Image (cartoon, rainbow, N blue to C red):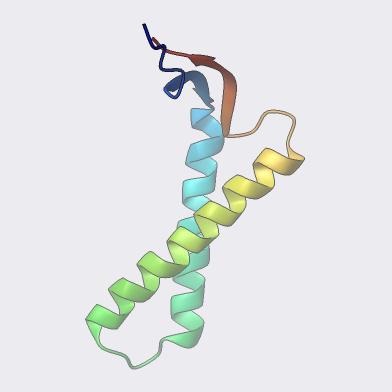
Length: 83
């Protein structure tokens, strides 16, 4: 019998308080950037700009909290092989 150890599973923990703070922070950063740099544009450019800045701010703040914080917003607790 061949054993397939390529499939892994893991326990993941989410801190919902930290995640909600990061969501609010990312949306505030996106609104601030739109207010300062997107004056007089069309509405679809506002939507795309908000989505881009929001995603960049959220990903960078998640990475920073995982590197710097004692209790990060997203953490992989353990990995194990699944049969």
